[in-house]
Amino acid sequence: MSTVKVLIVDDHLLVREGLKLIVETNERFAIIGEAENGKVALHLIEELKPDVILLDLNMPVMSGLEAMEVLSSKQCDIPVIILTTYNEDELMVNALALGAKGYLLKDTSRDNLFRTIESAIRGDTLLQADILTKVLAAKDRKEVSESKEAENQLVTDKEKQILQFVARGYKSKEIAFDMGISERTVKAHLTNIYNKLGVDSRSQAVATALERGILHL
Image (cartoon, rainbow, N blue to C red):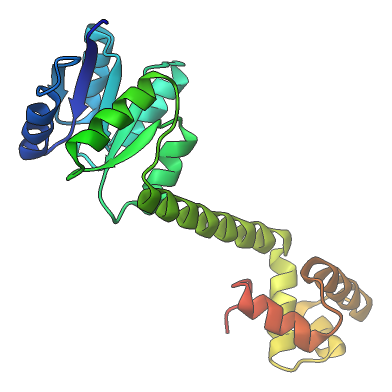
């Protein structure tokens, strides 16, 4: 059975040393290099051709996520395992989208470290139950946020301006006068707003726009 070449990328020396000590207890794995940021890592990946990369996300000079974006653009198929802490949920979602094969807490157990590396080498994605829960929750939050942002973009600036007037109790004729447009045009805009927000009244339009962050009073 051939030796698995491992590259450790983390800006904290203690983390690198700790992982190195653990990995070296298993003769199947060999640490072939260490890097303190993504920029150095990219150079070592090119030079050393590791079989698997243990990669921190938050690092100076170049983050792990930025390094993954470069690797993705080069269609590099070396499996990447993310070294993470409990406060990097959004980053983990982004790393998963870029092809990360696993996530390890920096204080993970020896057995879990080896199991995750073996899984990554096989091409599988292995997530601990607690990390999977956090990643899925963060993914849901991100999707909800992106959905709201898309809704916001559907409502034009002029429609948002009309919503502001409606929220202040202006009638269509008053809105038309203040905006220098016809009352018919105001009503057409209101119809568009209703359709986009899925409502059928002025009060519902204002309430929904406020709830979704489209309108700010």
